[in-house]
Amino acid sequence: MRNRFTFSFSELPSSLPIFPLSGAVLLPNGQLPLNIFEDRYLSMINDALSNSRLVGMVQPKNNADKTHDELYATGCAGRIVSFSETRDDRYLIILAGVCRFDIKEEIECAKGYRRAEVVWDRFSDDLGDGDTDLDASDLIDSARRYTEQRKLSVDWSALDHLEPRELVDTLACSLPFSPQDKQ
Image (tube, rainbow, N blue to C red; front, side):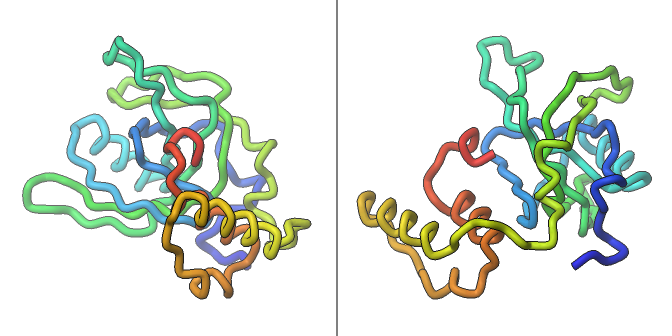
């Protein structure tokens, strides 16, 4: 259900500040706590707080040249839903996943952090009303087989109340896939 704090598809911006953070995965409707301490990312969060509160989380490709890692093509925009300032000049923030995006191209940003023009079209269903053709029972059956083969323990009762989209996101974040596969 839409409220004053959520975005409609037409309200999503054409560019985002980009936070490339290895291992940090954000999916639509998920949450990601972050500890922000580098100057460039403190600037990024200040700018985001004064605008749409959106930050694009993207997995970096780990190259030998660490000065400017190449990025994977797809990320997820997160809205800053909570933040606090610490005494030692850090931000503790929580991002709520809004919608996935594809990076069209990186653009110049004079403040030290990365920005990109983004395209949302492929992921318009991320902001949908929850209706989907996904069969939750088939998904749970597949997940059960996967976890049994790998001898993983799962509290299946905790998944019973989830909508199909929430179930997909929860399984993607919880199962032992690589961050690149999760994103």
